[in-house]
Length: 380
Image (cartoon, rainbow, N blue to C red; front, side, top):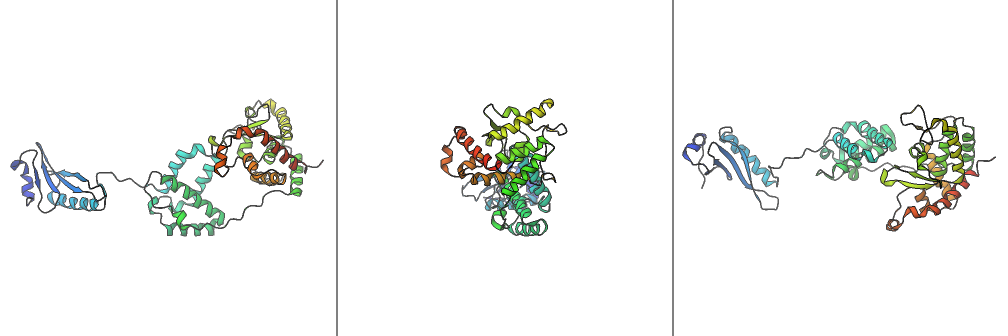
């Protein structure tokens, strides 16, 4: 049975009760004073409405520091939280903002990504999405994200807007691994702009012009790097950072850290024509004593840092990859083998049983077919 407590009786509680006794408040159920040997404290005991039927005890404060009125008000707040199924003893997690979620994503995933990929994310998140950078992720509602996508589309175009939303979606999903967040607002609210596939592959006439440009290029090392991308479909970074130690005596190149990180490392047989090109590069660059196939004495990395469109060669690096893929099919190579050659992730359960290392002979034959189809347009 409870006691009609007043501030006066609270002040005398230690004098009138022995240590270890509890005095229950008649006005607020669950609130009591626990008498100790040196001090007394307000405590609330209540059942948490989370389906577990548990009772929890929560110390509100010492009677010489917290007034009876304050203790009752605090007890009412705690009881409301218990009815909501919340455990007041558990510290609430602070939901990260987009900025802090991106910093964590970069910290934990950055080592798996190429520097160019990290820079792409940085540009989208910190640049394009700067208006929502400091909003907690659980406050990013569907209407906000949908309206932002439309706004970015008008300012940056359909591709830029879609890219920003993909970056937001990836960072949000990463944060959701450790935070109780609502469903991803990008998935639920954004209708991505239609993107027409780039028709980048060079046709026969375009290949003939490209070969003439490469043959006329004064920088033989850079011309050879373009040739590697054209005849293998390698991405720019993988071609530029090639090391001699990664090319074995059988003409098989190891690509140690492609897109997707070291877990996606692969080996690729190079066609005979390309091996001859690389041998000429080795002889020309031998005085530099560089471990890189395409060295640069002015770059921090030690190899060619950038391949881009110029008046001398007006094509983009990734255009070489598109051309390689298209002419692979033209040469009669099946799509599954093209998938292997380009180090794409094959679809289907069956591929989980395929050991790529045992297919080098098959891949070499395919490489020679593709190379022949491309080189025949070189002319005299």
